[in-house]
Length: 324
Length: 262
Image (cartoon, rainbow over all chains, first blue to last red; front, side, top):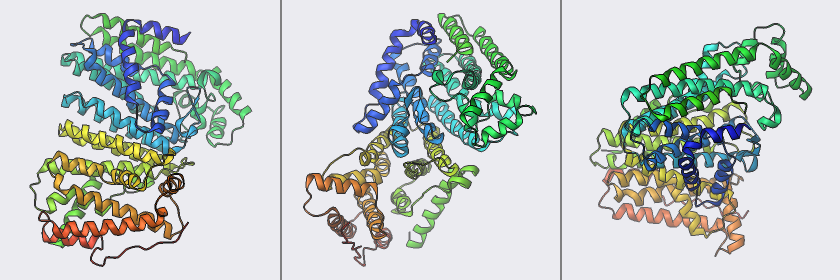
């Protein structure tokens, strides 16, 4: 159902997105059978392709040429893919999108080389864009994303963190690449500076809203929907927004401490997830996500007239209300 | 430029790279990046040999050194259990260094070099994956594989700045280093994925000698060729020649002789 909705939202861009999908398959083609198989395994597992979608929509505010935008949209999705392969090593994850991860199917080292290969391929593609500003934007984002991930590891298992720490972390972890996708679409297509700034801010707000929803879904979705146990973030020590709302509650604190200790049984996990779902932490987190979403929609209002405005609005609204 | 000065220049370059990649958490948990002296020497070879060297050369050489930091960080990830904090941060160290190399070259607007080096990393990753891919190839092809892994990024740096005449030295020098390392592992009774791949290829294709004998022979051949190239070269200054000879202990014609069969 959710996938259907997404398909409908993308329907205006279908032919261009199909081209990007084909190009992604070409991009992960390697002379190494192993890297080929590992990269395709990841690519065919699917994904929402939100970064390419935002690149294309943002480019519609400039001189839109699909051949050119392909060289931006493809690398952004590849960078996202490469980071997922490495994240699965860091999180010791066996499953992603209902399939075995590269590290689980092969081993950690193969996952390292697969990620390095995909990342290098992304840079190879983006060098077809001869605009130094675009490279400065992307390289800055890539460094900051890593800094965000390093902070995430530092903050793991630490219940005594502030909301500010969480927001700073998700800004780098997710919002920055979405924001950069929008900004790059605008810059490379030659949209004016003011438009590029609004699109960059739009991407940032949507990215923040998107990650908060992602963190909520980790608790509210079923194991089957997630393709991994609900509450995995907490078990892995990642303190997300709903948990931050509960950490000082005497009713929840002992259970949360127990959860991050790594000694929680399956029955305890299910019971805790149920309690969190029923708590006010979920509506509170949703309200914050919604606040970011409203800010994103406000940025759209400031953009020049274009049919892409409607698509940006619909996709942003979908992302704020998605259920998977 | 005498040998003392060469050493000092390499040390200063080493410090500069550490300044670029410095990150408190990474340093604490993943350690300093791996910056081997021989790699830094080859990166600086044109400068040490008196070629024109400006800020762009310097920054670009730093970016290549940062690539080696990135790739060697990922070589340190354990195949099966990488869940410790130190391993997690080593994964991120590699990614962080990859971002930094791109950022350095993006700040120089050197898009051509970004393309060439990314292309090289694709090749290097494919070659590194070959030891996990049940690849069977001749001994000579395995030597080419490790030559690519060890020296391709530096060769691309040379190509980009018209220093291609130095390529034979880095190719041979870093190959020798790798062979010495592999033989050292054998001596210590430790294996490696690369040795397993050589052994598999030997069994399937039938090498002229065992892979260990061939590896020892290859070391001797490469050392002799490097010595010949150095002594015949009109390109290298006397102090650079001497530094190379000392670095690879060529004067002693020392050969690690590990003939123990596995």
